[in-house]
Length: 342
Image 1 (cartoon, helix red, strand yellow):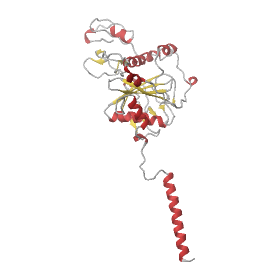
Image 2 (cartoon, helix red, strand yellow; image 1 turned 60 degrees about the horizontal axis):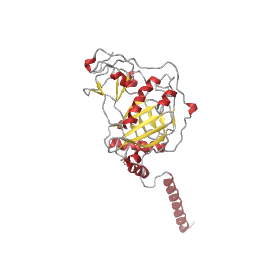
Image 3 (cartoon, rainbow, N blue to C red; image 1 turned 30 degrees about the vertical axis):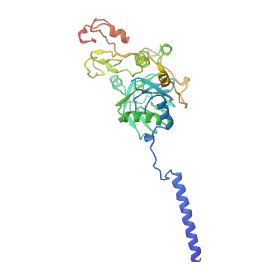
Image 4 (cartoon, rainbow, N blue to C red; image 1 turned 120 degrees about the vertical axis):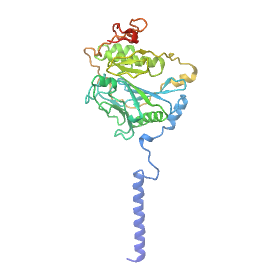
């Protein structure tokens, strides 16, 4: 073979190898541009435009509600008036278990209750695309001996006790939470309900063993519906107490006696002006819902309830607090402390 033929063959081999390497780089996504991890994906232009249209910002605080039966997750955003307005309703692709709270590790039950999520509960490296931990078991769950861990809202549409979204939807929800927390919201609340807590639904499930627990959740649901601000939640004597604060600003203990409380006053939300009507407009995102009505059950049986607690009004010694929270308790003799218990 002549030198010229060898040179031509060599240059041909170089071209072939170069073409193969270039194709491999393209196929692997290594085209020179840095790859952005799912957790770091910026909110899309369409999402930012919708936020602006609704008078919201990506940095504003968020609030999340989950409804099992409807397989829906709502994101609400705070506007300049301090109230929260509906941003989007996302379909929950999958969740496991039945209606009712999670009780123990391995029961594959998705939690119900009032939870808080801080930045340390975000998981950018989740094996389920991205996720955030609900914080189960919270103080209330722990006071009742409930067990379990790593209860998430995540992607991949697979659930063993979690709320699973599609990857695209959890990426947007994660981004909204990430940006709000980065901007200074210390944590955001997630209220997980068995269903929309309407009077009709409560009547429909009145024979469930969990109806007593659900009445407590309904107080949180009703309070937000009326005021459009997530109500303060305290836990004491192994129960949730909704829309109260301690008289001295102290922290409550989940399994200890409740301290003196007062009920914060807030003017009910009254929608007005065209811009607020626009902000309240409900946008429902299309997507799969794997759970069907036939696969959802509400266990019936003897009604579950935490231990009875008695409350007394500090001024009258009567049952104003009892009537307020519908606990059916009797007056305590310890009225001078604000509210008595036993």
